Amino acid sequence: MKEEDHLKHIQDAINGLPEDFNILEEQIDIELQIAYFEMAREMRAESMDRSTIAEVKTALYHPDIELEEKKRLLVQLAAIDDVEAFRIIEAFHKQADDEIKNWSVLALQESRMVIQSSLLGEQQVFISTGLGGKGQNIRYFVAMMHAEAKTPFNETQRKLVESEFRFFLSESEGELEEITFDDHFVTAVFLFPLKQNLHATFKSFIDECNQYGNFLSEDVIITNVKKLDVDEIKEFIKKAKNGRK
Image (cartoon, rainbow, N blue to C red):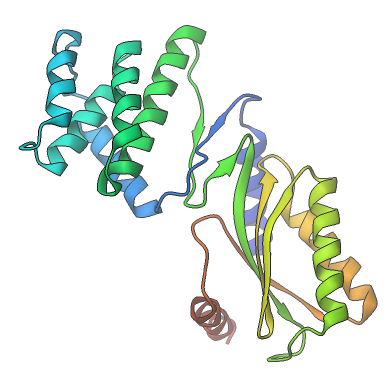
């Protein structure tokens, strides 16, 4: 009951979003995102003067400027309502090293939002997850298990799961990106509209599959934080079972 209430609160919050919102498309580690937004919040008082934009541009490319300082400069640039600042971040991002590439993605997205908010006269909504998204769809990772513990899916069951999953996703304007059968698990990465009811779609999908032998467990792991490997899935299941005792 508590879990259903939690899901309802999440769905209510999602339903309260405006019609137009922005989703971060890139897959960026959630810890890095937290670090970026914490720095952005801390530095809001350190507003950058537009007259210093040219100096900042030079500093971003200077070999003697340390990585942490470049991160701070990008955060400061992103807060400026100025197309020139956006273009500087955009150019830097295109040639950025791997160690700062994802940071520049977040700065670019924030700069875009600041400018859009100013032009449209209303606050823009920005949604980011570890797995990113596409358009107004969020990317999810799911792990499903065979109803009989440690039993592998046979060929017929594999074909059924994949075909039904594709069908139910397409009916909801979602998209299956990849699916893998490994041992007694099936894992998949898929896109799903943020405002659609994911819980209801999965229930219908599992019910449909189980008309052909009740082989698919109703317990699933769904996350938009990162892809899980088999060991992480097993550890999650173990913790969930211990929590029920």
